[in-house]
Amino acid sequence: MRLKFLLPLLTVAVLIISCFMPWMTVESKNLTITGVDTTGTTFRQPAYFHFIWAGAYLAFAFIPKIWAKRTTVGMAGFNLAWAARNFLLIPVCQMGECPVRREGLYLLLVAALGMVVAPLFTKDIAGNRK
Image (cartoon, rainbow, N blue to C red):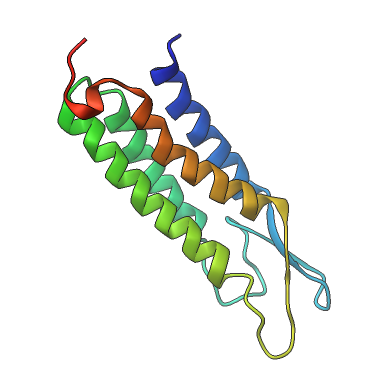
């Protein structure tokens, strides 16, 4: 399988796995927060927005048209912005209590950045034909 097919699948798989991993822990309340399970906080499930963008990203990643490849870069940009928002906003200190960022939140940011870089490995993105 070629890199241009494997890399988008790999980055989306890592993104989905990172949404189920622990994002942060609140030690005083003994809470472990993931992207899907945010019980004990005022946040809903921020991972579902990642799932929507990742699904649309994969749908457009395998369309062999130039406009589809360019659209994937835009969708990956929205996903990266949402990941940056989650990285900065969710583990913020509130009322003197600072949660600890865990590995899932860092992996989410790396996967979202990988989704931006993955379409750039195709020749079709710049309008070059095979």
